[in-house]
Length: 210
Image (cartoon, rainbow, N blue to C red; front, side, top):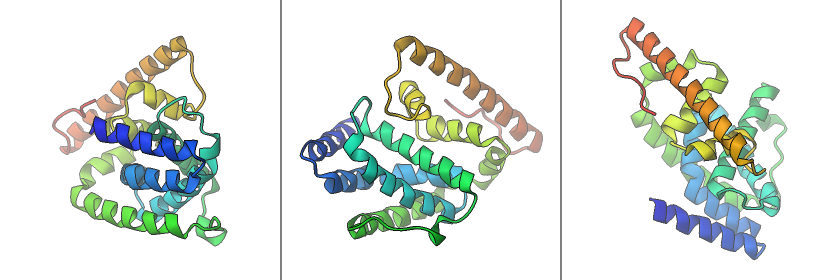
């Protein structure tokens, strides 16, 4: 897994270094699209909303690649881009489709997005645990976001800090340590809250693993 991810990172970086933004984006969506879309589905719950945010994420990814400076992994930055697209979508509180204008020459990315969404949804539909999701729905959006990124997607703590701080800007070591410690404490409180809710409703017997 780690080896495959490293190969993917190198492939994307190679395209970036040659200025081939389209190929870099295509490789990123093929390689990371499923887990990014899974994050969006888990967070937004409605597949239609997640699909719209995923389309916005793809466009933002293309536009942002030329300015990406590799202060973190491309995967970490991609999660930050997806999170920002999600925040924007929630703030607007309306369907983006009415005003959506596709990027020029976006047919290649659209052809990649569709099977990623379809295959991911098929997988998620067989894995979804409605009772646990019901418990998660009682959490704040911020707490749900932290739970999905750390527990479901298993982002390392430093990468998680970077995602929540926009992904690209480098952070001082002491800031990184403080933020990671704060997030660990916050996640522990979330897990304890979920466990208590599950215990009361008879839905959750074991604690959520970190």
